[in-house]
Every structure is written in structure tokens, then in C-alpha cells.
Amino acid sequence: MDKHFGQRREVELYMEHAHRMLVVAAHNLDNNFYASAVNRAYYAIFYAANATLTTKGITRSKHSGVISAFRLHFVKTGVFEVEYSRIYGRAMDDRHLSDYEIYETLTVEQVRADLDGARRFVERVGTYLKREGWL
Image (cartoon, rainbow, N blue to C red):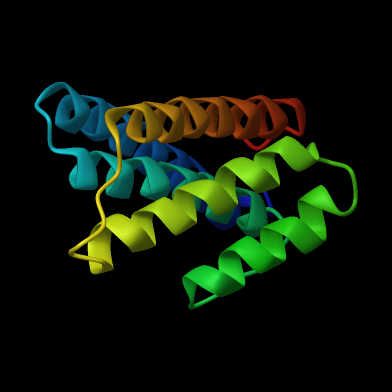
């Protein structure tokens, strides 16, 4: 039996969630629900980042802990390019803005950029996980 069976299943579930969030984000963008689109794009990244952390047995309870651990274990070590840290950080900032700052609004261009970044992030994580035998 695969000693990483439980971890592998968790990785798969995180990636399923990430892909589902991309679909929902695109639907929200198409229907002019920009705040919801940014939220779902961010969560696609968040779930994909959690998938990477799971491969190392790392769990974090806060959003700030997930991005920090992803940067420490995957960006700083060169596994992922710095660009993915920037994508994650921008989406996190935009999600916070759209979810909590009622007087601030994001432009459709910002939302499209976040969704594009989320797609690239999830794709890059998927490529890594397949190469490493987790998917």
C-alpha cells in the first residue's frame, strides 16, 4: 500500500477544489460579479498552495500562514519561480480589498489579471505535482 495514500488523496482534493474555483471565478467574471470572481480566483490559488504544502506534511490554519509557508518552502528554495509568489500576493490583496473594503472597487482589468494569474498558478502547481508523482 502507498505510504502517502492519505496525503495523495488530500493533494487531489485540494487540486479539485482549485479547478472548481477557477470555473466559478470565470462564471462570476462573465456575469459582472467582480468581487466574487476575485474571491474565487484567490481561493483557487489558496487550495493549490495547500496542495503543495500537503506534500511536505505542512498545514497552516491562517491564510497568512499558507502564503508564508508556500513562499518559504517552495519559492525561496527555487521550486517555484518568484512570479508565483507575486501572483499569490496580488490575489490575496485584491481579495481582501474586494471582500472587506466596501468603498474600494476593483476594475475588470484587475479581476481578469487575478483570474489569469490564478489559472497560471494552478496549472504550474499541477505540473509540479504530476512531475513529483503526487497526481
